[in-house]
Every structure is written in C-alpha cells, then in structure tokens.
Image 1 (tube, helix red, strand yellow):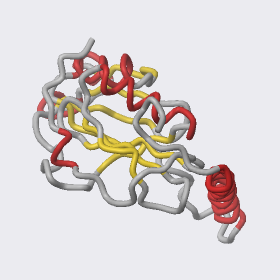
Image 2 (image 1 turned 180 degrees about the horizontal axis):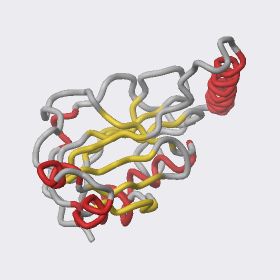
Image 3 (image 1 turned 180 degrees about the vertical axis):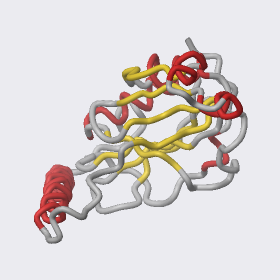
Length: 202
C-alpha cells in the first residue's frame, strides 16, 4: 500500500502496463500519420481546433483552469473586442469568453453562460486531458487539496490505462487520462454523482 492508498503492482505487471502504454501512444501516433498519408490529401479535416465549455463566471473559470490546472490564457474575448470584430450588438453577450490552452491539443474556449452543463449523473459529455502516468496521483492530491472531489484513478481501457474524474466549479465533467499507469486500480466507470461541490478555491 502506497501513501496515496493504492497498492503497488508486481514488477512484471508494472513493466507490462508501461509497455502497453508506450504501444498505445505509438499506435495513436501511427494512426494520425496514416490518416494524413491516405488520399485524398487535400480534402481532409486537419484537427480539432477548439472545444467550448459553459462557465457562469469567467473570473472563477480562469482561477480554476489557469490557476489550478495550469492552462495558458490565449485570448480574452470581451465586449470591446467583439465590437471591434464587428459582431452584431444582439450577439455580443453570447460571445464573451476566455480562450485557454494546455501543452497540446485543441484550444478550450470557456464561454460565459449559466446553462449547458451535463446532468449530475451523466457520464458524457466530458473533456479528457492527457497527463503523464507518474503524475496522475499528484494531480489527484492537488485537486483534493484545492477542495475538488475526484473519482479514481479507475481503468476503463487496457492494462495501464487510468482515468481520474472531476468537475470544474460549474459542473462540467473533466477527466485526466494516462497510459502506462503501474498501480493496482479498480476497473469500471466512475460514480460521477459524487463529484458535485461548491468551489472556494484560490
């Protein structure tokens, strides 16, 4: 039993899970390359550009996504910005948002909106963020210290896959996912009903 409460797997299982994780990452990289090399070369969509999440308070959203999760602010889209872009006046309130990004993947646009979060007991939709296998438990501890309840790690994929589920302060479901996790963890879907909280973070 480790300090985090999870049992360490035997050496052979840890090596197998690391190997599966490396194999899965190579498979994903090959799949992306194979897609790009397959005809028609000019008529393909390139990648996911951005995803949107509704957030009732952009100040709280920035403290959570930038301050706690470590995202980088790319752009603040406020009323004067939208006016300069020529957006019609009746649309402006709907366009206010904060664009953030993590180390890789698409941009995440946090829109000021009091509605749109998934129901409390719904598994989907959720946004999954990649984390190194050796950092998953540190992220769990960091989130819990900040008053954010988590579920996991749990495994839904091959041996070595691990997911940690939590909500942002507005009820949007998030997942930290990794491959190559070596600890002994339960297999199965999360109990997302246990993730509601009132955040008073930094």
